[in-house]
Image 1: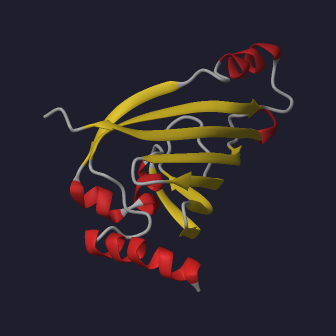
Image 2: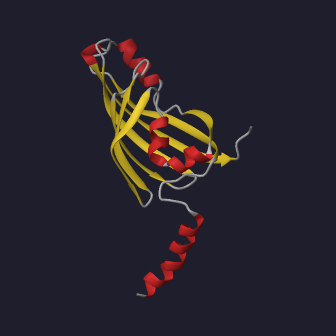
Length: 160
């Protein structure tokens, strides 16, 4: 009972701030994507070497997150991190953890139409691990297995 009474003021304070679970802080965010797995079964040696060359090489970008985007929260933020039109299925979030399946359409180049996602979040940081299988007739054997990590962290106020 003492424990519950101790937490009550903290919950009241959060409620007063109007921050819902999964909301983010508006501002300038740095997004870093790292491909951790890119396997093409049956690929020619040159293609396999090309795939291997992109592994573990972080690629970063920055984006200004508006108050409306921040309020929409981690679900919309997670979907917007991918190329193409992506939506989350079976999305679950709570207590700083999230999971779901990202389904993308209109992806240019190689992209997984369906990727399993697990991650964590705070108001200033989102971390995700995604993995899936790319199916495309242009790929030797028709498929590739990929995995990546995405980390997004608020780095300050928007520049403009």
